[in-house]
Image (cartoon, rainbow, N blue to C red):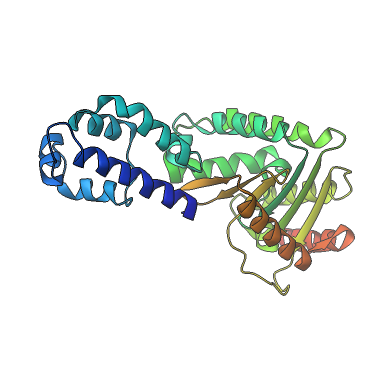
Length: 282
């Protein structure tokens, strides 16, 4: 969890405590408030100390229980402000993968230069339809979200139209382990590697492979995407982190540059891909 996010959550907790202590009917204890709301006292403590993120319903109940109904709009605005930095998969995938892909298409369409680091799967902009299908199925099983695989695949393929617009640039680095990962049948993976071989010469794509035996300045870490040096989106199992402050963007750009220094490009990248492809067809 980012430091900025935690500070914002602690600030919201302090505001909740102020509303409790300054309630119109006198100093309201945390125990009394818990009884009034029908919550465990521990929940009051966690919310006030920034150790739990409240839901909008929690905030409305708190405002009403402390006699400050009008404070809900302020509390809700604070919540939306810092939640925009962490987007849980549970919420994003509540309606399936298709809406997430459509949102990403809108975000990418407004960008010209992307810097991507992938260490667990082929970057979505370079995936074949069959490979993408298996990726979505993996996450459907993990997140237990609605199954809309075919719609999601079509939406991801539409995102790739961005690659054919002059002036756009996808700078993507793949950990070699991605090329070996059997998240799909071997035949599907072979076709995906053929796709990667074909994009090496594209004007809008610069593909680098970080070999397994390359010396690294940093551990592989999480996958991320930097959009126009204005926003970085970091992917984790539970959520995406969206950060638009200059310090965070700058940090991830330095991480990308460090991995780039360990990568091979052009014909050298093709050699690595071809070697892995050959191992799948023996």
